[in-house]
Image (cartoon, rainbow, N blue to C red; front, top):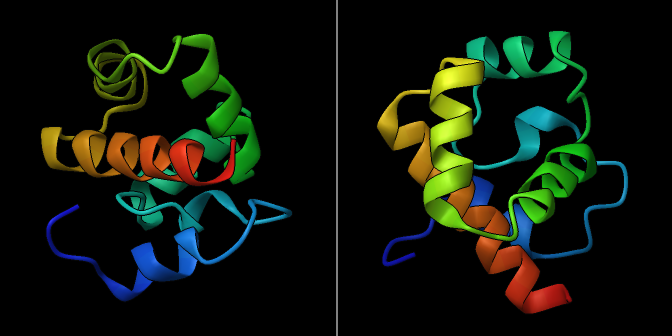
Length: 90
C-alpha cells in the first residue's frame, strides 16, 4: 500500500494468531458484523477464503462485494492487506 494506516501497520506487525475480523484493514463495524454472521469471525478464516480464491485479487474482491456487501474501497483495502500479509508471512 502506498499509504499505511495504523490498522494496517498493526495487522502486518505479526502473524494472524487470534485476530478478530475487524482487525483486518478495510473491515469496519458493519462489514465485520456481516462477515461474522456468515462465519468469518477471525482474520485467519477470511485469510483461508483468500487462499481458496488462489490469492486472485479480482475474484476475492468480487466475493467480498457480492456475497458480503463490501464496497469497492473496502474490498480493495482488505484484499491488499491479505495479499501483503501472505507475501510477508508465507
